[in-house]
Amino acid sequence: MMGHLPAQQNTLFYDFCLEKHIPEDHLLRQIDQFLDFDGVSKHLKSFYSHTGRPSIDPELMIRMLLIGYCFGIRSERRLCDEINFNLAYRWFCRLGLEDDVPDHSTFSKNRHGRFRDADLLRLVFDTVVRRCNDEGLIKGEGFAADASYIKADASRQRMVDGPVDWQRRPTQSRAVREYLEALDNDPSANRTQKKVSTTDPMAQWAGDKGPGQFYYCTNYLIDIEHNVILDVEPTPAYRVAELASTRSMIDRVEQNLDIKPKRLIADMGYGSAAMLDWVVEEKNIEPHIPVWDKSNNNTDIFNRSDFIWDSDADCYHCPGGKLLRSRWRNFKSPRSRVTKENTIIYRSSQHDCKNCEFKSRCCPNTTFRKIARSIYEASRDVARDICKTEEYQQSRRDRKKVEVLFAHLKRIMNFDRLRLRGITGARDEFLLAATAQNLKKLAQRRYKPPDHRIGVPVLC
Ligand code: SF4
Image (cartoon, rainbow, N blue to C red; front, top):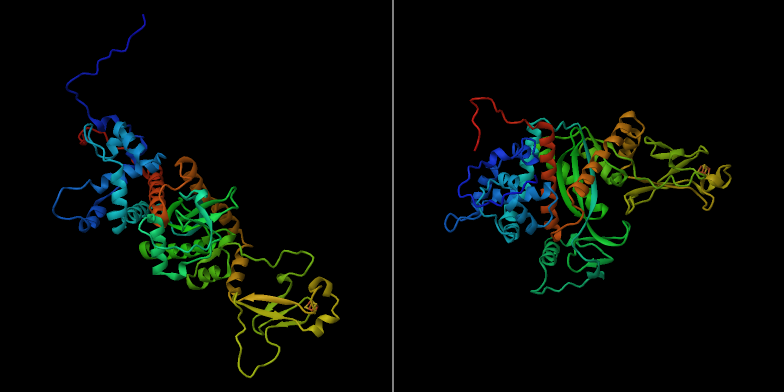
């Protein structure tokens, strides 16, 4: 006999314990074990008035946002709906069955107000990183840095050719106002852009990733032992900003956690001379970074490695046994030899090259050979020597760990486009996403199921 589902949903009283209905292996139960909002509440206290109607608990909003990032729910409206009828989400947010879920507009109000004033999302991120450290997930031996493009919330249709003469208008969007304020505070931040978004001018146009689009970059600094994200920073999608962010992240981790790595792993984009010099000389870290070198392109012509550097005599020895000097005569008043590109030019003598047997392989189109030596060449040599070692081969494999995190961010967490505008919007989103990734890592590596032995109290 076919059974029928009884349409009886009108029971008046239920004996229902939310705690008992959340499976022990549910991701949110595992994450919950590592969340601690005591420090957050204390920090936020001074940002709230001691009188008036009580606000929505900021802890509730952070918990809601974390659900969104963990499960790839990108819309805040949809997030509120999902929390309304998902028991596990309610449990994680500490909401009872009959408690109201805050309206989606609450997020926007708090984000642009207290959350940013108090730098709340950074505080939550740092708290989780510290917990990772306490749980032994950070070894501090090797760090890896990389950046990934994330589409900005800026339409291609709102693109104009730069430079743009911005006039302050009361109807300007928040992202434009923030951009103009940033320029007022630091005029050096003004950069030449060929294509500018009128909705989010800080975003950078990039056409080399398929059809042109505006992008931000999320920059990660991770510890390679367990792939914990130690720091995250948003930048417009161009290389100089990415290098600057890596420096500030390494400094911040040293300051916050008192950890400085033995080696820094990154791809060739980070192998500029100035960056390598900063890593070697200033931070005393081994750069496991390929050197950015354009001098070895043509294999038929002698390249820089065919010339032997003599640091004592401050010259190069060429394959023909002659010298390349930066100074062939003495001037009365000393001149700076450093060019705008921070290089010193070493050149051979025309007389030597004229009758040299190697001229066709050395300087076929000029009368002498020239080598531009970076003022940071010593640090570049350190990186070149490291690239020949066995450890470097391991570092090359470790470098992929950052890319795995970016793949997780985009594919599993559904994060391929920003919802918020401006660099502050990108910062909020990247911090929350990285916090969610670290919490998942803690849950995966350190979760301990609750003890159900007799005598151990059960929360209900
Ligand atoms: S061409 Fe000049 S620089 Fe080149 S190997 Fe001969 S002497 Fe040396």
